[in-house]
Structure formats: C-alpha cells, structure tokens
Amino acid sequence: SYNINLDISNSLQVPNGYSVSSMPKNIHLTGRLHNIEIQYKLENDKLIMNKKITANAGVISLREMSAWQKDIAKLQEITGSQIILKKL
Image 1 (tube, rainbow, N blue to C red):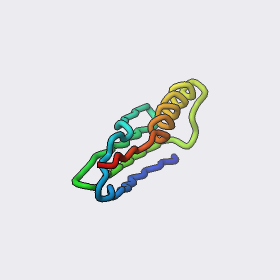
Image 2: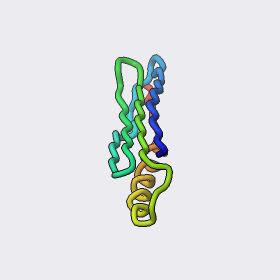
Image 3: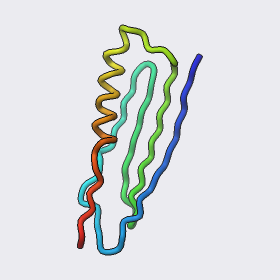
C-alpha cells in the first residue's frame, strides 16, 4: 500500500493600495484512488490557499487512467490560473 497525504497552506499579503480582482476558483476532485481539494479565500488583506491531496495507491490501473488524467487536467487548469491584483 502506498499512501500520500499532503496538507499545504500558502498565503499572499495583498499590498496596501491593491485589491484582488481575480483568483483561481476552488476545486474538489474525488476518485476511487484520490481526493484533491484546493480552496482560495480572501481574509482581510491576505489571500490564503489551502491544498489537501490524498492518494490511496501508488499504481493506477489502465481502466482508471482516463479518469485520473481528466482530474489531473482540471487540477493543472486551476493551478495554472493567475491571481490578479488591481491598484485602487
């Protein structure tokens, strides 16, 4: 059995005189072998990203590969999104 459990939190202090005009959307992907959750929230002048990833197997079977690849594509789309700040 091969398990991965990651719980990562990052934050970005929004500089004085700026606001967040765009940020990635939250995502929750669940499959038989994995659970991926990424949440973005703005608290006061701080943008916080929480990422929780659980993988329950080190090997993905061929019949599960298509679903896995679709979820990874969605994950890449979200993590490739930009945070945009706007000057006030």
